[in-house]
View 1 (cartoon, rainbow, N blue to C red):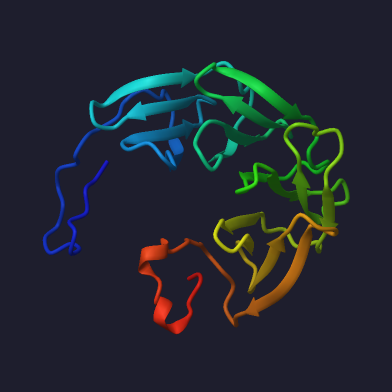
View 2 (cartoon, rainbow, N blue to C red; view 1 turned 90 degrees about the vertical axis):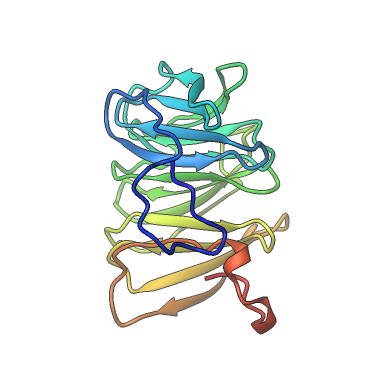
Length: 228
């Protein structure tokens, strides 16, 4: 874990604030707790999720027996009481990390074999992206209290890129990007049918190789910028 100075980097950093050791394989996912200071979640190729106290460097919670296959992504809910995960076994799991138990799960969230993603929304629902059995890209909205059927399910196109959702809880807008795509689609989530509303598409000449979401404090609000 590295500490970036308040006014940005002036010298190269060589010493981390703390080194967290606990995974047996490569770590590909990290996510800060949305409300608690110095609490960090990590997930690795060992199919384990560890929640850390960064201040002391100790592991608070180790969830190493809940996933039998690779974890694609992990998302905290708004207040940090639950996490949802998308896994290679086509399941979306909702986990209470304090009780260390799965409170809800959905098998075959998307029928296709390609990777999927799942994120919590501000209202507690879960938004997922994945592939159909015919390799069409899909997006879906779920109520974690009843995951038998999705609230909404939309099919997009047949591109190969995994759709990565970037969510803005202040505007309830989701930006969908895909590696190799040359467009970014915007959707608004509401509590009225059809629930997932297409807004617009941004197109570029070059295909996307990687994506990142700017924190709100980096936006130019004087120019009415809501996302970057």
